[in-house]
Amino acid sequence: MKSNPFGEWFLFVSILCLAACPTIGHADEVAGVYRLAEINGQELPAVSWSFSRGGQDCRFLVIQSTFLLGSDGKWAALLSEQEVCSAGDGPEVTEGPSRGILTGTYDISGTELELSYEGIVSLGTFSEEGGRLTLRTVGVGRFEGQSLEYVLEKD
Image (tube, rainbow, N blue to C red; front, top):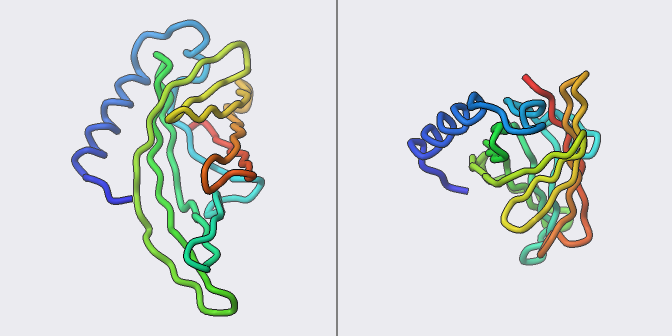
């Protein structure tokens, strides 16, 4: 994932402004900045998706991620990850780290959260007490058959 540093900075500042906007419904309870703490019970860095490419077994290793949830139902995530591949008993080849920005929308009802990204829906729960957000998603395309659970902690 190649990225434009100016674009990253602009989006980061824009989303921070969204997080500070007046609140709508229950979104004020979840709006804010979150740090990705775990993927499938593993602290970062942790493997997210695995896939095969050209006879190699590959995986994405998430190094760091910050989620910004706006009070208007929009979200953005800053993601830093590496792609790690190996063929059989051969050495691992690592690409990256690379950085990227993901954006989407979310809806909340009580403590249930539905987060959407490019037509993919992740379901989750929010705990006000601990400021923890747990999201569950299933893979599509080359990630079909896989599922992930993300745990985010409010900063």
